Length: 121
Image (cartoon, one colour):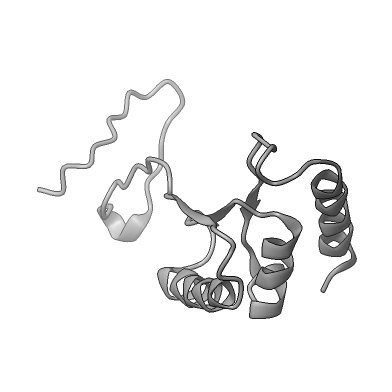
């Protein structure tokens, strides 16, 4: 485990030590990444008080996120008294312009008026 993850877990532990889980109204969201994708890392986050596991689909691929979700379910099976919500943060809007003529090379002159479209026909 990285030093940064360890430090963050200690910070969460301080919050949890001062307030009972049932009294705490603030939820702890954890964005999951490669540093904590192992079942051991997920268990540490659960034990530290994670309420929501956030999957950021702007990074990684669907297969990696599915594998992590499977490990999270396995970790939660070992902590039957804990509940963790799943949040999927999907990619924001992206503009796809399709294919360009001239093998993708376009020269744009200063002050030219150009039109970008997603119409592939």
